[in-house]
Structures are given as structure tokens and as C-alpha cells.
Image 1 (cartoon, rainbow, N blue to C red):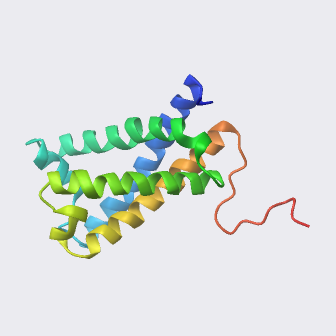
Image 2 (image 1 turned 180 degrees about the horizontal axis):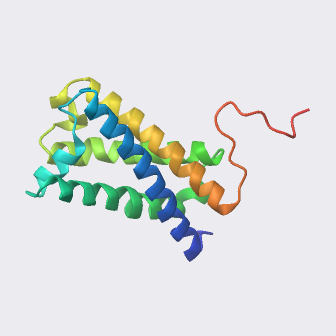
Length: 157
């Protein structure tokens, strides 16, 4: 039995949106610096749907905000650790789905290896950032104490 309420799903959507914004800013910075130009998820998504880049952006935000936001709110009670860590665990699952479903569908091969060996590494790091933001924002919206990595507990003696 899941303990998430309908309002928790709304909080998951808000957290998913915040995490998707952070991820998108990093993706834009990566593009502006010319790092791994072959790894352009917006171009891949819009190409799969035969649409302009705006279509890729809409799909990117829909997945990160709605699908992953709601799924995280649903799974959160079952994940171990602090909120940011729960987000990272969840995002590792999202990364794995992307590597074995989306990348091959986009013609990038299993784990995106047609784009080079750095593609799975870079997308893994990006998903970890997404997950940390997702979990932290969700925890904050629930009113849970969500210290980041390396934080010292106030109850430690």
C-alpha cells in the first residue's frame, strides 16, 4: 500500500519541474561550451517525433515534470536514505530506462554508445543532478529535513 496522497503527487510535479529546469540549464551550458555536441537530447527527441526543437523541449519537460515527478512521489516512501539520496536512486532507474529504451529508439544505440563512451557517463551524471534536485525539492515541499551530502546532523553528539 502506498502512503502518497494526491497532494504529494502535486508536490512531485513541482519538484519534477524544478529538477527539469536545473537539468535544462546544465544542458544549455553544455551546448554553449561545445561539450559533446553529439549528445543533444532535445535534438534527439524532436528528431524522433519529426518536429522542431520546441517539440523536443515540450517532451523533455513533460517527461521530467509529469512522468518522473509523479513516479517519484509514488515511489518515495519505499526508497531508503535522505530525500536527496532517494532522488538520486530514483534517477538512476530513469537513466537506465533512457539507456535501454530511448537511446536505441533515437538511433544512438544501447546506452547511447553510438555517440561515444562518454555518452552514458555524461547522461548518468546529469541524471544524478536531476535526482538530487528532485528529491531535495520534494522533501522540502513535504516539510522534511533534507540536508545535502556531507551535512552534519544536529542530533549528532
